[in-house]
Image (cartoon, rainbow, N blue to C red; front, side, top):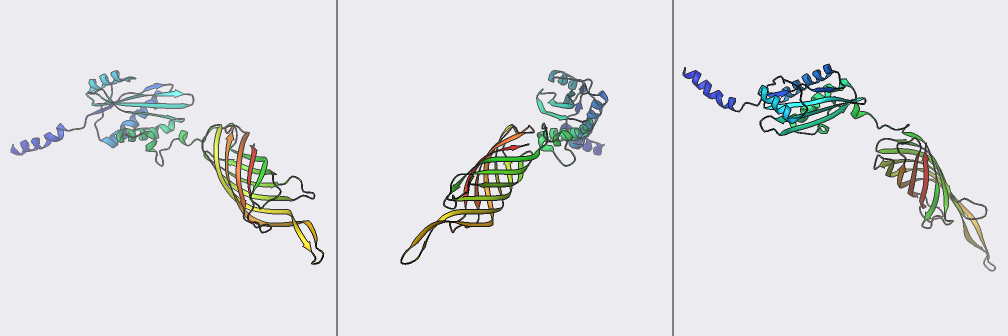
Length: 325
């Protein structure tokens, strides 16, 4: 008898602090197969039970608001009530859940998630149970094997994300390496665009428009550029870096003197050219990003690491308008 009394006293604290019972009410199914909604509810009960170890009581009816859910929880003696709905919105299924404290009538957790396949509801049940148990947002519960199809779907665009690019513009030399002044540029490239970045290999020409007897310069550039796109709308600023190999030349007039007693002077064109590496930095803005035909306004600062005529590396500022199609 004494042993039984001691056992009863020992179990009293545990009983006094036992976790409250839970109930997951039948979910309201709007445009969704009721069997799918019932299966989701069963999965949710299993996932929650595996995490919190609470006792679960069958709910008497579906509810769409807090007073109804609180009354339903009181009827079955549940301390915590989970209620919600599965609703069809276009091709998606929107799952919403609310968790309340029956006695206090306060909301403990609210979760919402959208999927585009019934098969993903199993992952939703696991993610929502984890978020409810940990008090976290659903975005923080992403793990390998629990990502839904809707979350990995690429951005919808009117057409592809890559294509040929044509850029034309002007070139202004910086410093003394190029003497003849303003020039033109033409680039032909291939623009590959992802969600937040773009890569562009290109071949381009930049130099003076007329040569004849005047001083001139020119450059053939074979480059690859990488760009970080700052926004995802139709007005998207971006920054970029790139580099490659260039063939560069310059013709300039040099004063030549001949003779000691009688000096003869002439201004002859002297050509200097070489292959050399080069780099560029870019700022720009991309327009009509969600369309198949996109337009970009860019400004580059370009340096080629070659010493023409002993005047150091040629540097230019290049401004252009590009079209990607």
